[in-house]
Length: 429
Ligand code: ACO
Image (cartoon, rainbow, N blue to C red; front, side, top):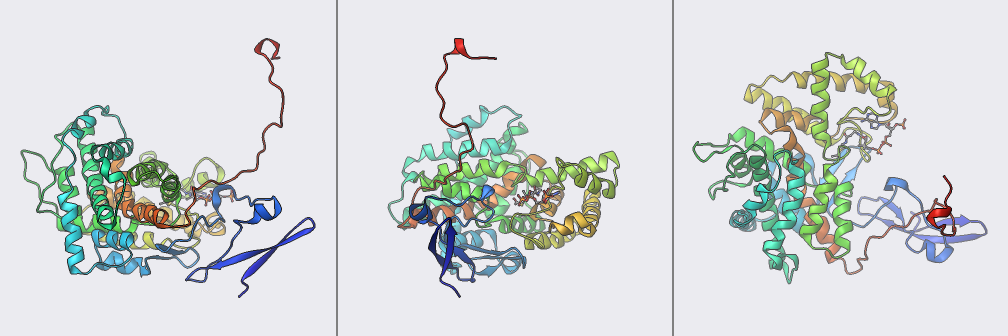
């Protein structure tokens, strides 16, 4: 294998070092290119740019492989729990029994939000999207404990991790309660992470509510599948913000905003909206797929991925889970039938085949969340709760890198060249 690459521009040839990853991915290191030649590389949308070295998550988009810290996503989804997977992502190894117990206890201990924060929820109008509330409240939460913004040692980092993960879940459920005008519920000490979330979503002060075990498991699996996905838009945002040495909470709040967009985490909500529209209009799946091909502004939401050029392994797991969950809960959802038909139609269509467009994680996750009663505007919030450990792990990688520099891409300027200022009275038109 070559350990350098040559680049020739005009009459100059430079040798560029090659970096090989542990799965034999090869990258040409262009970091010194501008200093040596005056030119930069241009990669609009970063589709071909490695922005960092990372030891957290491995994806092979051609083969449909996803692994967290080396462990296949299929094994983790089947055998692990969201809390255990979070520990793995953040601290690098699966915890032993004592470590897992201690982590769980930390999460339980820090699950409350400061009482004064409850008034902040009242300041949001009922129309506020829970993603807006979530990002604002993550920053607000850190103001109540400014010591969390700096880590002296591993113990204070672990403390901040537990607080962030646990409070994000409490804030998310509270933002939902606020939006429907119900009392915000305190978390319980006897429930685990995912059950507690469901309790805070659906519990009422005057009614008993015990989360259903099948529903807990289905949601836990969704969180595992969303826990990390290497350098996607929101994770790159967290790393970018973290690279300025902004604190963990501010960086994660920025990640929430990036995730909100319909081309990223917002796609799970957009899929259900698309399926509902097809169902209400009575349009056939064939006709909808034709419309997608003819109209550049209409996309088949939940299809396509920047990295996966074959099946998204998370979509495979969720499709199987979807059947199981709906069956167990006795839910008949006509949107599932439309989704299956749409998938069949698209996978046979030359347009989708030629562009390697397959269902992604968002195509089936929304149907499961609907079946377990998660309201539509909370879908992306669920994605955010799931992605928190991945964001923390990536932020930490930046934070611990002794060679870390502020992320600062360059550009090729295409605007006006230098011109003189003209006073307003003399401007034409
Ligand atoms: N429906 C129809 N056509 C599509 C779709 C789609 N869902 N996705 C991509 N294409 C087409 C594009 O029009 C383009 O066609 P062209 O070559 O004729 O111009 C080609 O496929 C390549 O698409 P790009 O937009 O260049 O692909 P990119 O890698 O930039 O985008 C993305 C990836 C944003 C996920 C895109 O596939 C998309 O918009 N999908 C729908 C939204 C969605 O499901 N997002 C969730 C992604 S997963 C996640 O974030 C968790």
